[in-house]
Structures are given as C-alpha cells and as structure tokens.
Amino acid sequence: MAKKKFVVGCFDDEATLFPAVKKVRTAGYKIHDVYTPFAVHGLDHAMGLRETSLHTAGFIYGITGTSTALGCISWILTKDWPLNFGGKPHFALPAWIPITFELTVLFSAVGMVLTFCYLCQIAPFVKKHHFHPRATDDLFVMVIECTEKTNENDLTAFLSANGAIETDVQIAEEGWWLGRYDKDELPFTNKTTVAA
Image 1 (cartoon, rainbow, N blue to C red):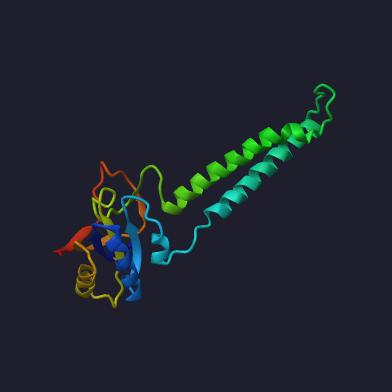
Image 2: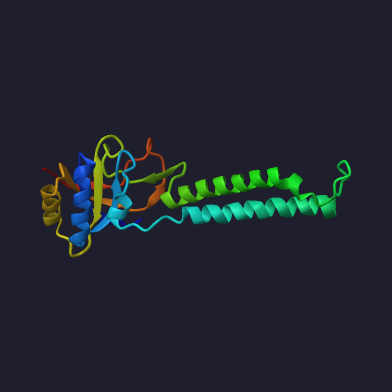
C-alpha cells in the first residue's frame, strides 16, 4: 500500500476552522479531508467539494424498483399465472400501486445506503487511518496532503498562525484496507509533534 505524508492541524472551534480552511485553500495547499465531531454546515463549500450525486443515484435506484415491481407483477398476473380476483382485469394497475411504491422505496433506500458506504469506504472489517483520536470527540482536524513542493515546517507554522492548537506530521495510508482495529496495529508512524 502506498503511504503519503500529511500535515495535521487541530482546531478547537468551528469559527476558527472556517477561516483557516479558506486560507489554506487560497495558499494552494491540497486539503485531504477535514474531520469534525458533528456536521458543520457550509464546510463542504469552504473546502471546494462538489455537490454529492447521491440524490441522482437514489432516483436511479427508485426507478429501478418501480420498473422491477411493475414488470414482475404485470408479467406474473397477465402472462405467467393470470388469476381472477373478483372479476378484476388481469392488468389492474391501481391495485399494484402500494407494492410498486414499497419496492421503489426499498430499492432507493438500500441502494443509497450501499452507495454511501462504498463512497465513504465504510464496511465491517474495513480500516482507515485515524489522524487524531479526538477527531470524533471535540476537535476539528484538518488534514493536508504533502507534495514534493510542500515544506512541512512552513505549513505547520502557517496552521499555528491561523488558529491550530496542535499540529502534527504523519505518514499514513490514504485509502482503506481490510483488518480489525482491536487486533491489528495502525500502519503509520508519527514524525513530529509541534504544539502551538
């Protein structure tokens, strides 16, 4: 697995984090991700992330569910096994609406959950590197990917000047891998820790 070098800056308040994210982007650094203990409105726009396509995927899954329900019911009740339900016609579309609605919702919900898990790389026995143990507790953690032109000392000083209470340089796997947190060690090494 390819490992990369990251500079990690920790902030104690979202009011400090927002201007720092904008200044880091303006300075030309590549933000790998920002980890927050709760959803922060507008952070995706500040990071320059495009709008998610999950709603489009949900619409496609819903149409697939509708087509599946109507196709299966109409084939079963008109061609394969036509039954006489109290004199109703074999193609009784109003009677099929509830089951069609339910299959539409089922396909859409399950499909969006699986797509979300795939995009966020969330699954049982999938591990990702944790850049700071308090990222899910009370700290806002900005992770910046280093390139050949990045000077780690200048970047840590830049983050500290913009409100970071703690900075760190780490070498880590940027993707995900199979394993268990309770049995395997995290495959990274901390290089330096600089307190603000």
